[in-house]
Length: 379
Length: 172
Image 1 (cartoon, rainbow over the protein chains, first blue to last red):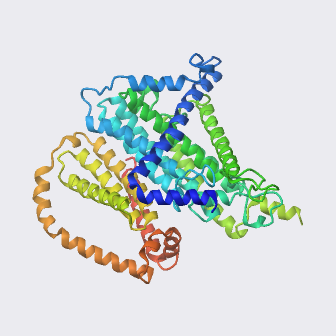
Image 2: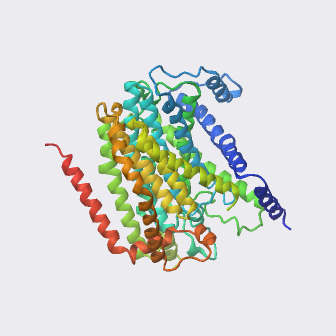
Image 3: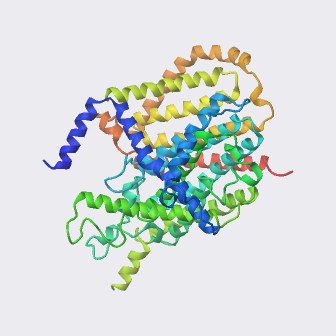
C-alpha cells in the first residue's frame, strides 16, 4: 500500500472513531492558527512598514530583528486590554457583531485552492460558497455599529452596509466570465483549466490564465479587483472608517480583542479577495508555461504541493501588496462618487463582460485568445 | 449519516425553529430581524443536508445577506421604529394562525415533493449518492430548457418591480 493511501485509510478510520465536532474544531484551529492569524498579524506589520516606506520613514523596527516581532507584541497588548463595553451599548449585539465578521471572513478560507492537494473542501459550488459566507460580514458590521450607541459608529455602519451590498453585485458579475470559461463553479476545476504549458500534447483542452482569455475577461479582472477593494472597505473605499470624518467609523467603540477581531476579519477578507482573484484570473497554483505533472523529471507529490503553495502565495501576496500600495496612493472617494462608480460604472461594464464572454465562447468554440494566436502562427 | 452529522442537522433545525419563534414573538423589532437572519442561516444548513448545495448558497446570498440588510436598513432609518412594542397585535393575529400552521406545512411539503419528482422525472433510488451529486448543472439546464418560460416571466416581474422602485424614489 502506498504511504499516502495508508495515511488516508488511517484518517478515514479515525474520522469514524472520533466525533465530528472534534474534527471541525481541529480544522477551525488549523485555519485560525496556521493561516489566518499569521497572515493577519504579518499583514499588519508589512502594512506599517509599507506605509513607512511610502512616507519616507522607518516604521516599526525595534521589537526583534527589523521589528518582525511587532505583531506578536501587538496581539499580546490587545489580549491584555480591558474588556470594555460602553454604558449605553446593547451588550448582546456588541459581543455578537465582531464574531459574525470573523466567521464570515474565515469560513471562506475553506475553499481557497492553495494547491491541488491543499484545498480544505473542494466544494462543487466553491465560488458561490465564498460569496455566500462573506455575506455574514455586512450584518456583523451594521449590528456592531448600531449596538455601540454612537452616531459616528452608526453612520459608518450604514455606509459599510450600503457599500458592501452594492459592490457585491459588481463582484458577483465579475466572477461570472471565468466561471463561463471553465464551465464550473468548483475552484479546482477553474484553476486546472488555466494550466496551458509549452509543448503539451493536449494543449487544446487547456488555456492560459483567465486574465488573458479574451479582452472581456481582461477587463472583468479589473472590475473584480476594484469592486473587491470596495467590498473589503479598503482605501480608496474606506468610507465606513474614514478617520478624518467619522473618528473610526463602525469600530469606534470597540477596543482590545473585539477590535482585534474586526481587524482579523478585515485582513482575512482582503486575503480571500486576493486569493479568489489569483484562483479565477491568475491561474491559481499553476506555474506559468510549465506542467508539473508532465515535467521532464518525475517530481514527488510533496515537492509539487510545495511548488503549488509557493506559486499561489506569491501571486496572492503580490496582490495584497498592491492593495497596500493603493492605500497610500489614492485619496478617499465621496459617498456619491462611490455609489456612482458602482452602479453607473462597474455594474454595466461587468454585465457587458458577461455577455461579451458568452458571445466569444459561442463564436470561437470556447478557445482562448492565446490558443487562437498560437494556432494562427503555427499555420 | 454519522451521528455527528445528525447532531449538526438537529442543531440547525432547533436554531431555525427557535429563531422563527423569536421573529414572531420578540417585542423588539431589531432583535426579531436578527433572529430572522439566524433562521435564514439555519434553513441554508438544511438545504445542504437535502443535497441542494447551490440553493443553500443562494439562500445565504439573497436572504441572509440581502433581505436582512434591507430589513435592518428600514428599521434603522425609520425614526423610533426600533423602540415600538408590537407584542399585543402579534399575539391576537398569530395565535389563531398557529393552529392551522401544521396543516399548511404538511400541504406545502407534499406539494414540494410532487414538484421535485416532476422536475427530476423519477425519485432517485439511492438518495445518499443523489444528494452528494452536483446540482448546479441540472438546475441551469432545467431553467434554460423545460422551465424557460416561467424563468423569463419571473425576470419580467422582477424588472417591473425594479422600474417601479426607481419610479417611486425619483426626485419630485
